Amino acid sequence: MDMEVTAWMSLHHAMNAKDDRRPFSKATLRRIGRFARPHRRLLYAFLALSVVMAVLAVATPVLAGRVVDAIVDHSASSTIVKLAVLIALLALAEGALGLANRWLSARIGEGLILDLRTAVFDHVQRMPVAFFTRTRTGALVSRLNNDVIGAQRAFSDTLSGVVSNLVMLLLTFAVMIGISWQITLLALLLLPVFVLPARRMGTRLARLEREAAAHDAAMSTQMTERFSAPGATLVKLFGRPARESAEFAARARRVRDIGVRTAMVQHVFITALTMVSALALALVYGLGGWFSLRGTLDAGAVVSLALLLTRLYAPLTALASARVEVMSALVSFERVFEVLDLKPLVAEKPGAGTVPDGPVAVEFDDVRFAYPSADKVSLASLEEVATLDTRGGVDVLHGVSFRAEPGQMVALVGSSGAGKSTIAQLLPRLYDTDTGAIRLGGVDVRDLTFESIRDTLGMVTQDGHLFHESIRDNLLLARPEAEEDELWDVLRRARLDTLIEGLPDGLDTIVGERGYRLSGGERQRLTIARLLLARQRVVILDEATAHLDSTSEAAVQEALAEALDGRTAVVIAHRLSTVRAADVILVVEAGRIIERGTHTDLLAAGGRYADLYRTQFNDNTPLEPVA
Ligand SMILES: Nc1ncnc2c1ncn2[C@@H]1O[C@H](COP(=O)(O)OP(=O)(O)O)[C@@H](O)[C@H]1O
Ligand SMILES: [Mg+2]
Image (cartoon, rainbow, N blue to C red; front, top):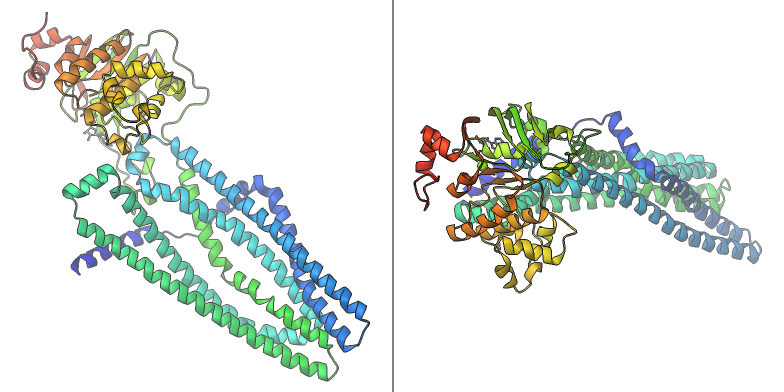
């Protein structure tokens, strides 16, 4: 009981935070127009066809009236046959055109989904890492799926529906007034009785649907986060499964209640509609019959009127709720545009160049850096917070300068949180510096194409992520054209060949999400193999051997030494063996380089490095300095 109350409270809090409905700007509408532009031929065809279909729909009741008149007038039977054949032909034509019309609207709608999806995917892919560190994956995926589909509905269903219904309505009215304006006016009087409550119900339905959509999105976020291997592990270790379930159940129950309410509101709506149109029909028959008896109206006209009336209410219903539907569809468009409008903080300059051929030097020149604040990189609705943090982060790097000559190996050492990984991430432009410059082969990285950076620089990150794909695919990411024997060669060098040969599917074994089917060390060796395959000229290793035990480390060290040979390397090290091999050691503390030199020099200086050496690097390594 208590648990449910808290679950509910957090639920309401989240819902209120998300309610940011605004009127729609002309700019949004113009933008939707731009997305529709490529489909305008189909759109015109669709609209033209809608008009033709409306005309056909009105023609049949009129012809039916003619049949009745022919019967009453005792006309030649050939007239009746002709009319009947015409009615049949119209029905056939209506069917055929309906098919064409459906194809057109589906083609436009699905085409729009395609355009929006690819645009969003393309754009999100270009967002900097900072964006992904802040965004909830579930919210992003829902943006790609639900909102894109919602936006498409605005087009193929609502907007086009409004046009064809409007045409239908006007035409029907015109014909009815032409037959008997008195009866039409009287039937019209019933209209407000019906339209006013219909609008109220439309609004109510839309509100219910919006609430249900918010709950659906929240549930899918909860699932994507909890049902990943690391998420599930965390819940098992620290989580409160009962609380998680209660929260989920509270949402699911609310969705059920909304579903029942929606169904009831809809049914009441339809019943009311049927009743009003039945009343109007009675009116037409009664009044029309009376006029007919007095000779002011043909019997056929009464039948035509009655038939036309039944065709009046369907478009009326559609139009009554159209405003709300258009609005909610526009919300979807806005939510998609919101993502498309995010400017990638790290973007390629127009006319960006490439790294010069030959060995590459790496240079940091007075680099100061703070991680960007949330409002610069993300969207409140994707982080699922009310407002974004505008506070800029504090500086993490305070003027870092160093140079790795071509072929040199620079080692970064220092306490955890000192800024070593940050330095490593700036080189491949996972983030951009605020001040100072970072150069690859003498060129500022901000003046290089992403492709050139990727081709020049390889990195093994601290977490060594793998995709939930086969080992082969994970390796080929580095060099898609690599041959089979090259794959085995790098696996051998990373000491993974025997392990993978022993797997039932070999190279085609799927490594689970985040590589959970491999041990930490195996995963790390696979990322090293990937690096060896890519053969870039500059290599960054961020604690690449942290998860290895000392035996496999020794083996992998050999492979790494081979990989680093002749390359420029920045190595964030936690083992003495790596550090000692470095040409230059940089000691990083609190975002500054406080010492630099070779192992022997630094040890002799007796500063921070000597401290670290005694406390951190003395794992099974002889204490005496190497000559
Ligand atoms: N994505 C991030 N956003 C904000 N601050 C971060 C981020 N990543 C790291 N930091 C902060 O930057 C500092 C340096 O971190 P890091 O470079 O990862 O240290 P190291 O690799 O030396 O252990 C730490 O204080 C950390 O809290
Ligand atoms: Mg680190």
